[in-house]
Image (tube, rainbow, N blue to C red; front, side):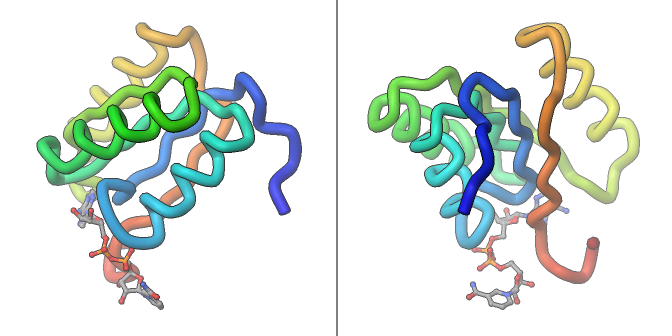
Length: 98
Ligand SMILES: NC(=O)c1ccc[n+]([C@@H]2O[C@H](COP(=O)([O-])OP(=O)(O)OC[C@H]3O[C@@H](n4cnc5c(N)ncnc54)[C@H](O)[C@@H]3O)[C@@H](O)[C@H]2O)c1
């Protein structure tokens, strides 16, 4: 069961598909702002747009390879620039990288 994530800014890595994507829909259903951070930007954009339409929350899609420190730093900086903060970070990429 989710706590109160309404209005919180949540980054979920590896969320353009699979478990991360399912978590993104659940957090959005609970009112969270959702950042889809994934290797696959095209898929991330599709998911972010679908979540926005379905749950009427702000979403943001960006390219992030969690094994690339610069992409992680740049991605987090882009989120802070857009939303002012990061409240929740969920690392949901392939288990090899966690
Ligand atoms: N789906 C299940 O029921 C299940 C159950 C147990 C374990 N797992 C394991 O959990 C892991 C994820 O499973 P899934 O079903 O969500 O997989 P998935 O392949 O559907 O999703 C993984 C996502 O992570 C992204 N990704 C991969 N490498 C990345 C990286 N370096 N940086 C950022 N994003 C990256 C991919 O583009 C993809 O969108 C796998 O290792 C899988 O074996 C899955």
